[in-house]
Amino acid sequence: MSGVSDRVATSGVTRIGVLTGGGDCPGLNAVIRAVTKDAIFHGIEVLGIEDGFLGLIEDRVRPLTIEDVSDILTDGGTILGSSNKANPQKYPVGENADGSIRFKDLTDTCMTHLEIHGIEALVCIGGDGTMSAAAPFAQRGINCIGVPKTIDNDLWGTDITFGFQTAVHVATEALDRVHTTAASHHRVMVVEVMGRNAGWISLYAGVASGSDVILLPEIPFDLEKVCAFCLGRSQRGKRFSIICCSEGASPKGGEQIVERVDPTSPDPIRLGGIGKWLSDQIEDCTGIESRYVVLGHVQRGGTPVARDRVLATQFGHHAMHLLRMGKRNRLVVMQGGELGDVEITSAADRQRLVPLDHQLIAAARSVYTCFGD
Image (cartoon, rainbow, N blue to C red; front, side, top):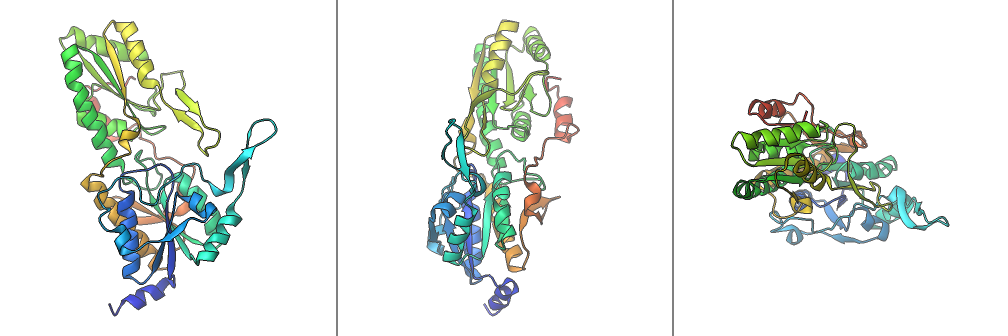
């Protein structure tokens, strides 16, 4: 332990806060565990901020100890809670006279609470929205270290985010299960998976399950081609088809299907419904009985797979390494199989989409997978 004081002195930080923002995701607790244990080992106090930035707004902060984070590695969700509606810069506080939502900048309130608790740095675990929300605190001198989280795997700057592999595993298992039903009843089965603008889950789960059709937001599909593909399989004796479809997929010349709009959220659009629309269209066009399944939030819950537990632990440790080394306002990333870091706001308002020349798309096409184009 003789080198501990030297490592702490590198950055001079003695107390940090950790929060989980945005939607829940398998592996969040693994990061909290890694950050907390690493920090305490190096003589740094850890305060857990409840429900993301909402905890800073409402001053809900509590100490985290070794006992608090023991045995949470395999747990889904987050022991701190989360919120995807609590952007301090634009927090809903009521309604205007015309019925529209009234927002207020509560950054000053959050800064006051940070000062009261003596928090010198924040470890912010989340996606692009969380990193954007961290920006004003970084500008005011609070060192913010970001840890990338999203099951969609669409955060710019990193090759992979924790939670993605678990979501792919869940989606693949679901696709495997509907395969037997589709074969037994000679149906087209459409499985709608998450993926607003990036189709990573659909691509990987579709390939892993041997789906016959994979529909991505990046490749607008031709409905007639999808119908012809399914009908052709039926006529050749393959009397069923499995379609893995991202929630953000859309037909050529059409738009994404919006389930609802939440004006209180920084990201108000809620997609959903492409699975039902597609199955109805296919049945009408081909005469083949079609059904749809929407996986929804089951992809975000439950125990993280081993790879996500490992990745989350690596990310948490590297976040603390950056903090101890005096790095400021950085986002932990994995690039080319190596841990690294980029400027924390570089991922804000940017998404890592599936490139059309991705090798997995090429591999899928080579085994006669249809992408609707």
